[in-house]
Image (cartoon, rainbow over all chains, first blue to last red):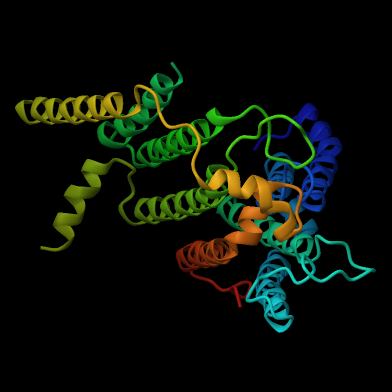
Length: 138
Length: 112
Length: 97
């Protein structure tokens, strides 16, 4: 895509804020509108802005494809592991053991926050991996 | 009144899938119809209350169940669109054109 | 030319029938609250621990749907990488492990 000054400047200043907004939606997903899927897609759209405006090679040096694919599979395995801790605490697969039992150090939301973060990382890295692969021109 | 607009969105997508010969335009029509159906569900779920379903407000809350189901539907729609576009790209590499009628003719010749 | 006109008439017929069906199904009053809505609004945040009720649904009551959806995303990414990599024909980086 032909590089113009406006596109170059705006994308460099705006993309970190988009990534930060995506992480905000992930982390506050249990008390305000947002959550795993929404935050993950906003993170992916920040990466796509960098890909469209700066070119695939410079965006790929920030988010390399082998690292993204390993992060995605690791997040999926962590999701299953987090479900198994609910099984170990006696509330069934993917249950929240902190809703009934009152532990002092852990807030009541417990495993819901952890699951939101895992889902957000997985969705964000999956969609940016698809788009990094589709934007290559050769 | 809103259901007329939602029906128009769905019919636009359906028309795009049926009538256009360019394969990328067919896939875009499918995506438009997908968005229309998701809007339908979320709209009819929002009729039964005033405010968003977050604890700590004293007004009547909307139905949270259609919104939660449409989250999964949106992500599945994105995955289907990505795979459809990749298949269109592979067809373009093999036959050299994006027109559906020419691809049909050439694929019949390939098997003779 | 006749083939094209027949096709156009068939498409318009399908559109007209769909429009008629949508008109009949969406018009009029609908029952505006489902039975499960009362239960979720009352007991949702104490049973799952999340204040956002939509999060309480898709990570508390129906967490298996979320698991299935992550599996769908993984398979879609694998499919896209496979089709594009065999189109290029060279292996420059390793695949979704």
